[in-house]
Amino acid sequence: MNSSKPFLILQLRPEDVTSDSEFASMLKYGGLEEKNVHRIRIEKSGIPDDLVLDNYSALIVGGSPFDISRPESDKSVIQKKIEQDFNRLFDKIVDKDFPFLGACSGNGLLGSYLGASISTMYGEPVSCVTIQITEEGKKDALLSGFPDQIPVLLGHKEACDTTPAGATLLMTSIACPVQMFRVGKNVYATQFHPEGDSEGFALRIRIYKHHGYFQPHEADKIIDAISQKDTSHAQMILKRFVNRYAR
Picture 1 (cartoon, rainbow, N blue to C red):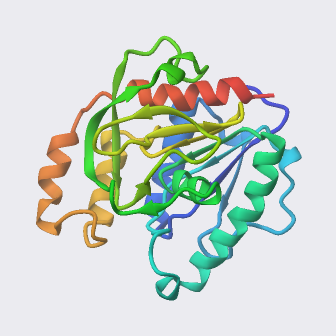
Picture 2 (cartoon, helix red, strand yellow):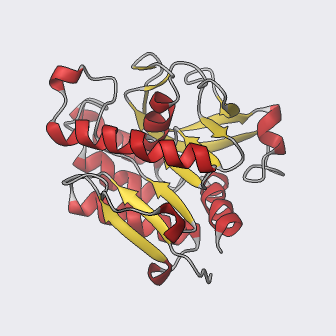
């Protein structure tokens, strides 16, 4: 894939091993080459003040251990900075309808910016689950031609309680109604991980087993349950996003 402007990937994971694994999966399933990507890990110093969106084809944001619904008094200084930085960035992204794909944390950050309540009401355990494509989702370029339901990998303590105002709901489930939405024509967010595969998730399960997503003794059982799960349609969402906005 050739692109005159690189894709920008912002990552929030503090551990090198999970950050590197997530980045490798984004390259693999997005069909991206490292030379076509500008990667910034923002978990230490936030989003650079001199970031210029017009220098990039599109922006992809990955997951993180941060909880947006955590009381402000319990948030770290860097978490508060990252949330403030994203709010400023979303001012530009939403106004320009700039191509954006946020997964998991990216979903919560965008949903919160748009005024949606973020809470633990629709948290889901680390697992492979089947979610439904809405009628509007079937019309979307990233999902057209997909089956009515697809399996995805996810695991989150919080989610959007409702579809953000002005957004279009693209994917849903009973356990978590807001699984994917779009703002304008080009701004996307998924609660699941389109870059996820069983190998990458096994790594995250081992690293995050004491972070409250599940009981630590359940780690091996969860890894076995997701082993070799086919989430190729979810990964195709990432590939279609990259193909659509490469320029």
